[in-house]
Amino acid sequence: MTTQTGRLPLLSGKDRIMITLTVIAAVLAGALHHAHANEVLAFVVAAIALATLASLVGRSVEALGDRLGPSATGILQSALGNLPELFVILFALKAGLFGVVKATLVGSILANVLLVLGAAFVVGGLKHGRQRFAAEDGRTLGLMLTLAVFILAVPSLTAALHTPAESHERAVSIVVSVVMLALFLLSLPATLSRGKSGHPPHEGHSIEGSSPIAASPDSAKAASAAAKHGEWPLAMAIGMLAATGIGAAFVSEWFVAALEPAMEAVGINEVFAGLVIVAIAGNAVENVVGIQLAAKNQMDYGVQVILQSPVQVALTVAPIVCLAAGFLGQPGFDLVLSPLLLAAMMMSALVAVLVTFDGESNWFEGAVLIALYIAIATAFWWG
Image 1: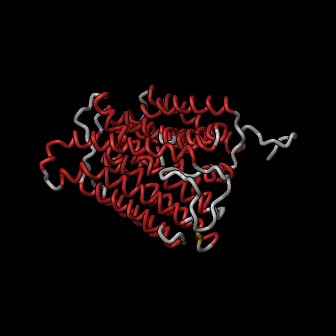
Image 2: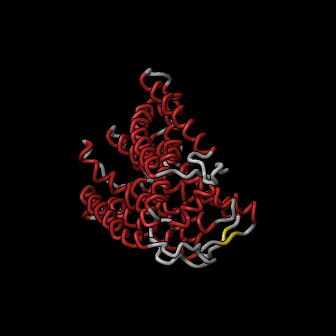
């Protein structure tokens, strides 16, 4: 819908609804936290507030990228797109909930690769039949995810295989974290120079100059159109990002404060809570736009939007958390995962490569991805 001057409104109907829901949920979460209300209710409300804040942070980053130009979009998405999830993990780390932290890192990758991508395949396949997408772009993101996950797996393998480095997992984790962040910095020149043609990709071909770890500017524009967003001026985009960032920090603290009592009340272990509940609330909801793109038969963009998130979790969020542990009073934290978490993370990365290799998708592939997610989540129900 446009205004009388023919310009897009500042706030679309969806923007207004999301902002209203976010404000209501955040205020309720704060009230329940300070009133020491029922732990489960406080946790559920905080989770809803966190999910809506994550969506608004993504929307603000997208609007800011629109105003600063396509070259900035990928950097902003990489640096700020996972902000709410990062806050939750840092507060959980400060509280000593190592199991939640490690499970959330793995769960964020699983939720996007298996649950969200699977849902996109199902929705798009049921509506449009077999869909095709730029295979090279999907393979590049899948390959980057696999390589990043393999690097992340090194500390776990030193422990599982009882190597001489077994007693130095923290040191190995720090080196791995520095390497991962260095890789992210090395990707920035490609991110800055990408997408100059402004043309959508041809079927089966990659976007010239595209970043190896982020969705293209064309994908960001398509995501905005799919979500029917309004056109935000620069000052509004910056203000909204600042407000949602501050709100995410407060809500994350309340969320983590309610997490442990809620787990005890409901009987959920911390690994399952991190792998499923925290990961979905802090990350996967934001990427529902990928499902919307699949429904609009824009699977080129949908695959990029969905897969760039787990790549950035592996390359930026995990190393930042590891390096920040010492400053949060948890110098013993490392990136060593349990064998089942490690296997689940590596399986999801390999699946990302396999399902994008041929540049085609159908609803049954999506159903299999979702089934795999459910099976893995079930395996962690008991710890």
